[in-house]
Image (tube, rainbow, N blue to C red; front, side):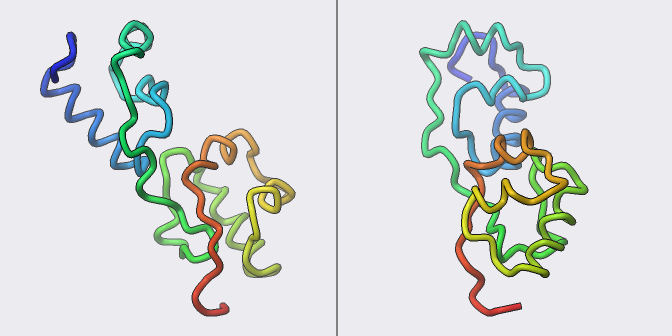
Length: 124
């Protein structure tokens, strides 16, 4: 709220969106906050920092359907990854993910900073 043009309403929207994402990894993500003008972000970019960055990851080899949610993740993409994982086992890395047919590569590249490929604690 210390920045010109950011009142309590925008501050709340920014925090809410940050929490849904699991943290910002770049300042330009502020342009995605509803109602926040991209010109404002550009003009204030030098004053903005992402802080701790991403703090909540999508554990792609451990997450179950009910928890497979992220603002950058199209609904049907979760099903494709879960089906692949069931058939082939845990995904080793992002490159393995990119090889899956039917994936929206643009969406997954955007989601990449939020992905964690640690193996599950127990085999499915």
